[in-house]
Image 1 (cartoon, helix red, strand yellow):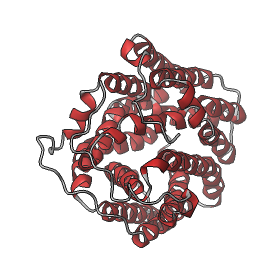
Image 2 (cartoon, rainbow, N blue to C red):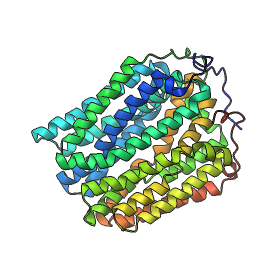
Image 3 (cartoon, one colour):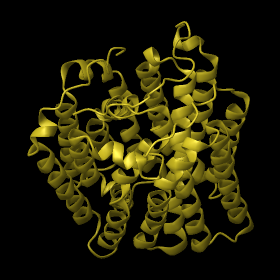
Image 4 (spheres, rainbow, N blue to C red):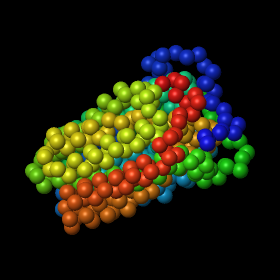
Length: 420
């Protein structure tokens, strides 16, 4: 069974003459703006747990930042999708970038004035989490509006390169900037999102199709779209289980490296391994999509990730952690583009925002519990036990996926990858 769009209409640029993607100035400007914002976010995300550790000395409280952020993301997910489908998506994107710039600026000012507190940082986490689904869905839909369907996979792959490059540069840069001053990572983040806001302000996009009258115009329309496809349900379940320990893993590796005397610079290098794997993996998107079915691809990437998490429990230093993360993440760009092919292309434009945020919400719904439990394990059992526990959860998700024939035997939609 596949998702069959009723009254699906592509954006008004669908019939526009195709030109090279590098000459699409609207896409490239948005790409530059989002890349700048992602770089600043990477710098700040590296700094937040280390700053909280320096304030409180408690890994459990450092995990609370991620817990609050993810809870806010989950709670805001479905309402955000409904809002994006009804609002001007470019205006939503501008709002989210301005909000993230102002929030980062508030942390910078509080740190400079010596008034930075855990309560302030937890409020920041809640705001960042709440705007995250708005930012993700509006950005993707704005990209869809300025890129012809035949070039969408190329544009999404370029987006993966952007995320990987900024993720690769963010942690090491964050380590250097944090060593220069506790407030500076947040100034960097504020400036970067101001640039992203400016690019969204400049770009004009075609208006979305009018919202069609349908029994699926409610907040849960995206959930219905996903639930009716057995293969996508299976994929979401597998990914949701594997994703539970994501935030806790990041903090556990940081704490493990700190316990073994690593500097903030070397920890930044270690965390950059994840982005290096994503960057290298972007080159294999087309090849993997041609040679593997969607279910086989997802299970293969899940197995690589599970094995990588287990290897991280071996405390061999920053370069070891960096290399393991790089290998574990090689398949993630292919999975990210797979999600778009299997879901967003088969959903009418008026429900794409809700479908996207529904998928993200389901994918992240278990992360708050994983983050909280991971923080407690870090506090009382240490990083090695925490990492092994996360690996065990990943193994459960992988086993569940392997046991499901609907996922193992899944095929690409007839023409979904024609532009790969």
